[in-house]
Length: 313
Image (cartoon, rainbow, N blue to C red; front, side):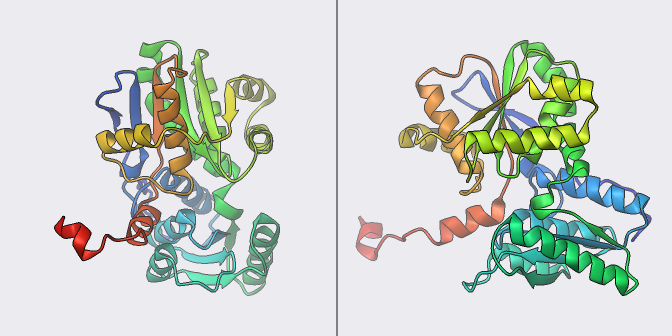
């Protein structure tokens, strides 16, 4: 691995006021610098730093076949002078953009026996053991980057927001939650900064709110002392996505100018947009715009195109 200790991302990312919504700001994690950007750049940077400390030379991780995490991990590993192996969910469909980007970054891509963490994480561990037996120095990271290093990487979002949030008093930070790692980092970062009147609102994606709360609390417990853990867990709210108001979502997306990941980003944007219309958001809010550019582009490309008559009209 290269001795270059420069951070992989461009921080701090900006905080942007959303026109027409005086109490709403965006934390523009999509502008974080590495590759196509996104909040996961913070996890990649923290993991690469840990690899340097341990003299590891191969990053082994994985995720969904359309995982932004996997592509950014490959790009970050290459920038740090490390090799990268990715274990992805099996899928016989067309190659997603993120897989093509990972391959272009020099990653070795493997397919798990079945989809989900129950198959991908053991495959990551087995692959790391095989690489170690062959003389490499692997650093194994669970599916989607759900590890303690990543939790503390995401805590830096709260560090950058501290002065802004302190000026607001009572406030909320909204974030999509898939693995729950970003939410865990935000809770710990806010607790560390002493921002007792700020809550993290995590919108659970592809799981129930109870399951997501358990995921977040496990990661908080693994990363923090008992005292900080109690302070962090007490500031977490977990919601399941609302159907929302399509017109409200369209207005919010149009005025923000942000491209949103349709899988993980869109549910939190839709839920927040609907609650803004219903006036259920009672405090100043920061929405973490987490990125997901490849998925947003693929979603747009696969949308139904109008026929020639509709275009002429």
